Length: 112
Length: 116
Image (cartoon, each protein chain N blue to C red):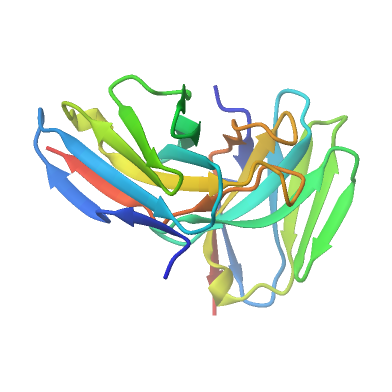
């Protein structure tokens, strides 16, 4: 019963361009998190946005959250080849839940 | 050294064999988790543990068992492996929001299991 669905499934861009990934979910949440996974490696936490926040920034990352539409977007500005990875959203129904629900991921390829 | 270490990193086995995947952490976190990743399906929770006496089933626990030997060690066992258990398995830990105010996970590098 996956809650997060991401689109696009795959995205290819040139270095320097911006990359936008979207995540939709089905039920109310306390927070939404984005993780990055380099090929065949573990996931790394990137950024968290709480349900009472609309936008958050961290370096070249910008996350937005629209709870009325149950959706979030992750924007990576001025992308680099090193940003090539899969990106997953994960939702939490409470701040301390053990059951994060992960989406299916967006595979980003950044060409030099 | 990695905060969350998984062994083995790769394993090929045959149907019916018993397999154990091990996880150890130096984060000092109470919470430990086992996830399974399949192409196109994202990550699914198998089991999670609060401490050595507390084990909880996740979304897909059938065919798996776990043991929390110590705060820092959490192992996943497949008693009789079958081909559809071929997947990438991840161990993760968290402080359950005690510091960050939200349950943020720290993952190991993964254990790729192939069951023939």
